[in-house]
Length: 244
Ligand SMILES: C[S@@+](CC[C@H](N)C(=O)[O-])C[C@H]1O[C@@H](n2cnc3c(N)ncnc32)[C@H](O)[C@@H]1O
Image (cartoon, rainbow, N blue to C red; front, side):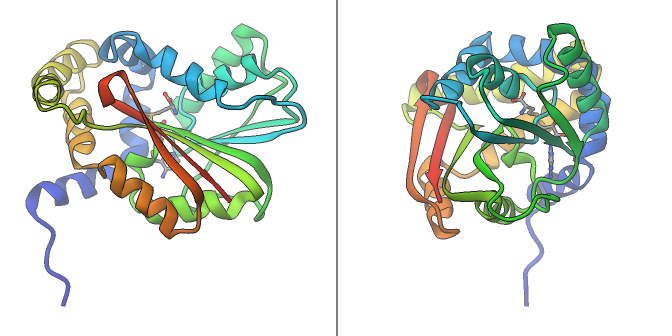
């Protein structure tokens, strides 16, 4: 018989069950806080993901958990010749912020947005050349199911590029970073978004997420090949790559 999960794990599971509502609540302040909390590094991390594609010509790209769209915008600006760019998210308010941004920067006709769950998308198998996901997979209720879905919607030979928070390997850097996650982030998040709970969830979900080696093993397990993890900024985030 399955044992009950520990209390901390139950809290995370219940937060994930209402994840769309949580992101709806913080959508208006998400971008600003994201840049503040990552000390501006998030721009460079997304540009790095976009730079992993040598050539966008003719490619169909889906960005899952696209949120307010900064990763898909970085990809579309770096590769103006993408054939298709689709952003998918479960939170309507995050998508609304993205829609307004697209109009502002004149990309409204190049990106299609839809509201759906990343672990059960409406796309046919083998649709995309590239599937990206920035800081989203950690939030899904079933990480394995989401990876399987990414694998399913990729064409044979297609690539998954997943950007996610991780914990630094160096013990001193890790200790400092965990202190920042546990105390700094919920405090700054509460002041700016007035939602301490959302930013407490952020640090708990980062600490509970798979270490890079285990996440790579999971990607291989669902069928990805040439799996790799590249640490960014002392390992506070990582880019995971895999091919179908
Ligand atoms: C931390 S934000 C990341 C947004 C964006 N990708 C970025 O790089 O800033 C996480 C996003 O994942 C979305 N999300 C969480 N669970 C999801 C799911 N199961 N399916 C689709 N989107 C999901 C949330 O609504 C939120 O917009």
